[in-house]
Image 1 (tube, rainbow, N blue to C red):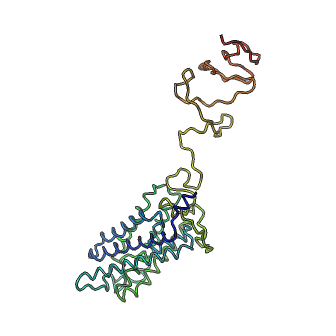
Image 2: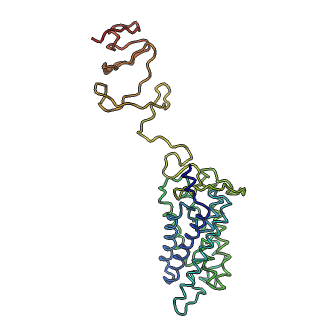
Image 3: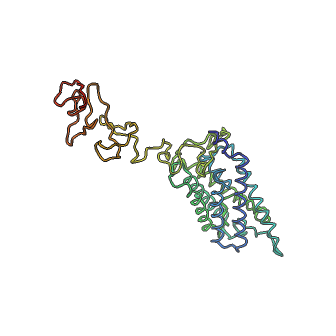
Length: 374
């Protein structure tokens, strides 16, 4: 218990992880968009791979949100308390703004660099592809909802997929989303990503930021609220999450892996038998520890068995079959060098086994007679 408390990430560590992860996402994603000349495949993979790598790196610390929309979806989906939302979103905005500032400064390494309209910012209407504002809003809302649904699904405690594949699925889904929507809006699905570079990209980009803040948050809210309805809650929601604004426990994060951060210590973990539904681990097939009760057919705990010695029935070295305890006045067949013969009927109460030491053959009065072992 003490090790768990010591290893639990602190608020400062979670803040740092979210800020650094968001910085890397915006810097590499938007930087690729600018310096690759807007190459669709390169930009989509840059965003997807940075989320994947940062989730592997910092997922055990904070869950690896790097996106205010993801944080909102997590809290409405019962995975995060409202008391953590301000910390997460502040860290994400800080990391994104720092990345935008660094990209702005590095851009001036080129003679005649103009930041306006050249920062990998999002766009719609006359300032971009000509895509109507309402269509851009619906697209960003839909793409963000799909993204958050995927995240909630792969981090669900009932999901028995290997924990190492969670960030991979999330990163690939983000790349997939970019491939479909870069030509239309530049792909936001992340208010921090849009704000981080938008404030350096000129007045037109700043004026359009409202859509790339509102649409992702609406999409994430829809996904967070509907995921438990569509697919079930699985485990009890974290205290102070969802539509419960009562706050959460101070230290609810569980260290160890990415999925644990997303389930806040709720029962269940990927790849653990029985834990997917919050039940205690089940006994593995073929392992000793339970014997059927012939009277009722129910599992019955069996005591540890000693290896078989030479002279006992069956193959040498195999466990001795479980036997019922002898009743008073009853002797067990096959003991003390008198193996049970094939086809022999089970002994009835009150009978003695022929050839049993100390019980002469033919003595059926149910009494034990003692004689010398000669």
